[in-house]
Image (cartoon, rainbow, N blue to C red; front, top):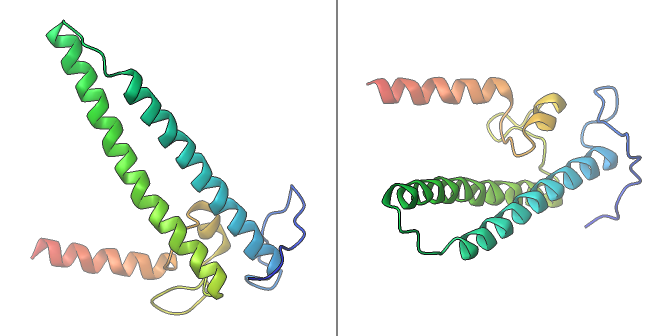
Amino acid sequence: MKAEAFLPDDYRPAEDEPFMNDRQTEYFRRKLLDWKASIMEETAQTIEGMKDGTRNIPDVADRASEETDMALELRTRDRERKLISKIDAALRRIDEGEYGYCSETGEPISLKRLDARPVATMSLEAQERHERREKVHRDT
């Protein structure tokens, strides 16, 4: 693993610099790590809340409402668990020098797309083609 590149607080990747240079790579690594830390913190808060929430609620409607809220929270945490797997995969791609390149075409993924969706593995065009193919298979 390379040493961290110097990264000013206001740094944003720009199209006019070499693609996935050390600064861009470090920018996305930090973005992914911060995102993961935020999810992990929310998860810890949810677990604490669930421990505190295991009280006996005599009113059936209140209990049902709390159980519904809990089920929704657990579904959200499950989606976030899957997202953490995608974040970890993106971090591995950074370490392997493959981050930012489309898994379908090998072409660079736009910086705007990566900034909006840092776990993206396909360029926008490849993703749209993939989704159209999926839709065709679903509709048949």
